[in-house]
Amino acid sequence: MRKLIVANYKMNGNKKLFADIVKKINKYKVKDTKIVLCPPFVYLDEFKIKSNSVFLGCQDITNIDNSKSTGQISPNMLHEFSVKYVIVGHSERRSLGENDELINEKVHVCINNDLMPIICVGEKKKSDKLDAVLTQIQSALKGIEKSYVPIIAYEPVWAIGTGKLPTVSRINKVADMIRSYISDLGYKNSVVLYGGSVSAQNYDEIINANIDGLLLGGVSLKFDEFIEIVKGIDHV
Ligand code: PEP
Image 1: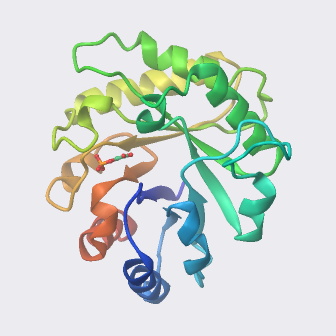
Image 2 (image 1 turned 135 degrees about the vertical axis):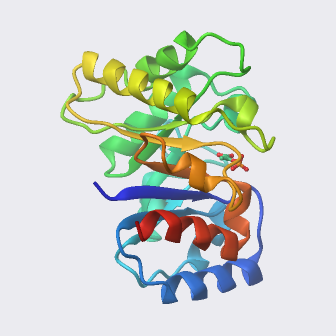
Image 3 (image 1 turned 30 degrees about the horizontal axis):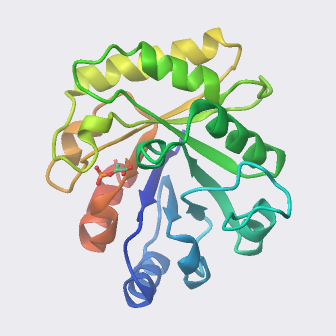
């Protein structure tokens, strides 16, 4: 399976930076990965992607698809910019008050509208039990058809933006646990990504983990380092 590499630009960047990133990514010959770029909504239009291995994503979506939702972004708006993927339930949004129910509604809005949710889950502290991760998955997938292939980004909150990384064996343990849990829920397949403090300096450890790809935050803004990680995965 082609590895998936997701760039989450969060609330960063500007027109100039993204014009540069788009120019460079359009020149990069992707070999064997799928790349998903998730800019802030206001910059979606800057992303005129020319590669059929690079897709556009975004960082959130409305939970209720109706016209009375001030400040929300609908699936139809996202389709206008050819968005295919949506990051849902990122810990930075959970910390603003998004709960499991709301995240489940957003997953439904995505799937009902032909958008692929990338569901973020992860324990808050390194010492926390991993049951919380399974509860997040179970809630996010409530009512979702079993023929669907869930994309789960395992992002331990303590590893996001901190420079702290779980060991490869811990990532493997959690990835296996997530796969087998999703299979017990009745889904035939799943895609499990890892995210949290991956950088050009440490990615070579992480790519040995039993994962289907990466969700990259801070490093996505430094194109040279981002593409070094992509190449490390793409050219193996
Ligand atoms: C993220 O916010 O999803 C993330 C992975 O961030 P970072 O890579 O900066 O830790």
